[in-house]
Amino acid sequence: MTGPGPRRILAGGVAGLVVWGVAALLSPEDGPGRHLAAAVLCALGAVAVAHLRAPPEQPAPKTDARAVPPDRGRRSGGEAVGAEAAEGTGPPVEGPPLLREFARLETERVARQVAELASPAVECPGENHDWLLSLTRAAEQSVRATSTSVYLGFWNSEPAGRYLDAQHEAITDRGVPVRRLFLVERAAQLDDALLRLCEEQELLRIDVRVVVLPELPPHLARGTTFDGVVFDEEVSYETVRDLREVNARTRIDARPDHVRSRTRRFEELWEAGMGLRELEGRVDDEENGTWMTG
Image 1: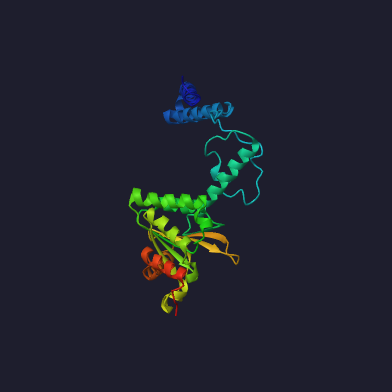
Image 2: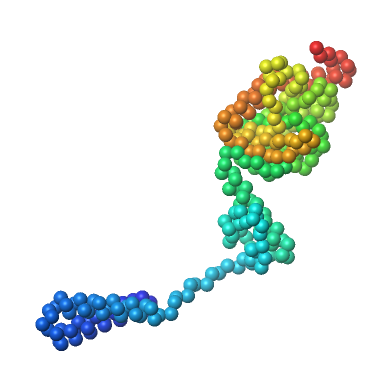
């Protein structure tokens, strides 16, 4: 079927021919040029009038089965950031209003984080285990982990289990070498619990060393220590503690100078650290009271 546009043009053409014929019959002295101009003007006028009188075309209905909660527009200023970008994305959410609102808030939160990750350095409150797991699963070359936490309360937790599983997968599935450096604040922390922790991680094929910070030579003791991981010498994941020794913030930093500094510091401490066999001897000496420090 011919659409409304071609029909209007056809009607205008017919009107123009009629005017041309009438003008040629009634005013032959005007010449064909004027006859043609009058016909063209008449044809254009007929098309314009037909267009103005035609009813507006209705857009095709959208087939969107997603349910939008009636309180969708209820947002505070901070929550609105990134919400428009997330509108119309994601699977349909069915269920009670609370579940739909939760899905909306989570979508906005993820959209904000994705936008922030475009920056070479980004922070979030608390300890972000999801970032740690994702970076571990994305690593292709190396993982250098520095840990000041030697307490079994953390290493026996569920997040630590998922983290160690992800590191083991990086080693066995992708051939990524993983090294962990434990930093302890005093020699008294060299005990059976730490030894068992290191042995368990060695069974996962993670290379482990331990550094007693007060025993470092002066040129190394003056350097900074941090709790975090350097991935592929490209990204540094760090946790920042407050005065209560609580992980208050998590930072991802991809600035090349910063990552190089963290990588260099890890290698210096790694060379000064003791391996598993030496740690076993130190633990025995500590338990027997035979280890002497200067």
